[in-house]
Length: 458
Ligand SMILES: *Cc1c(COP(=O)(O)O)cnc(C)c1O
Image (cartoon, rainbow, N blue to C red; front, side):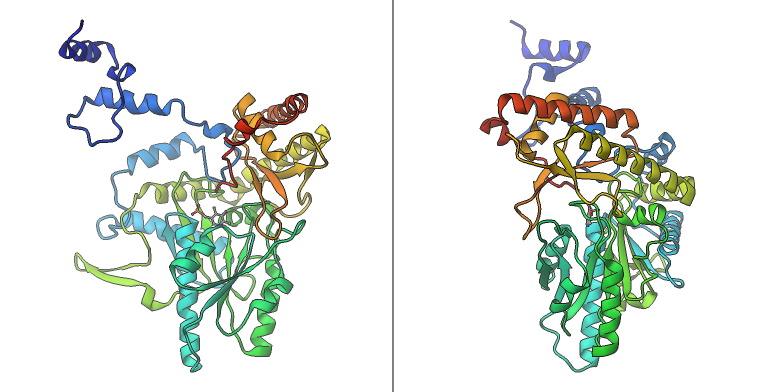
């Protein structure tokens, strides 16, 4: 028998101890290991991870150019928040904010924040709504103890999270079967003097459509005149903020609309940067309450921060600035149009299969296909998602819609920059074949159905 020291020596010489040993998991390791061993341990563990190239569920960037990756690697050792030590990185952040304010038609110089993603941006934006509301109430001699926020059931979970974490009553407009966005008539009954704001979505996670932002803006303007209530509108452009300006430049949803006071966008979705980076942009400086900005004197300079997190990497700010310069309006438009064209092709191919109906074709939409079974089949959408994953490894989400449309099940395929026309054709064929298998075996087995976990994603 080989002694353990002989074994260790052989493993060090020939490769990998963990080929025949337990990996460290439950307890803090006593001894370390060589960097080669640690590298192989981690790399081989991840070798069987899901392949982002076949992840049709995520809105988040799964590919960047090699030059961007070089910049990311070269800036990993900088803490973004140390503005005094790293003033150039801070300047790149400010340039990104100014460029986004321009893209979103801000009327003049304004302000904003780099965040970890849209979730942090929404927390900060909604906190600003709450503070501004309190100021308005105090100025009018009205109570400040019952704030509410109005939004549709089509929002991301972060809006309910904000309400719970920061003690605001959520007033949620329910969806209906066939109606997956909201408009002014839905919002109106929920508005009163305690409404800190209305949140509208540009590109929902469920079907990729937008709320009637123009209609809601008109309603809020009317209420401002008739009832002397100034209720601000925040646009959640997590996905849409980097899509609409390029695919639908004439469709107004941003600061062209007067009541839109703040916008969030995820740099790591259609901003085409790896996670995590998001942005919050205000219409005007005065939309950010002074009390939320922390001023610190550091190294003899005053530094201002408006964030929930503190330390974080500088790389994704650098990568965002790279993308904005690299692509510009022309480049983003080219990429978005390609994605849209391939999404249309996928929708056509799915319709040709003859079993599916496409949700909201022809409307302004993110580059994705939302679809469902058109008629009764011996299987359902969850079965299709499972089967196409089992046969071909595609991660395709199937999910029920939020209330009151919870009877409706939808599948959704994101069509990203790297999903080529050839991939689209293959995917459609694989979905066709998965349906044929399911038909033959009369639906998925219960044990398979229990394994289906891909939800609406992010
Ligand atoms: C993804 C998403 C969010 C959350 O954004 P993160 O960047 O993942 O924090 C919020 N709202 C909408 C509409 C989203 O699509």
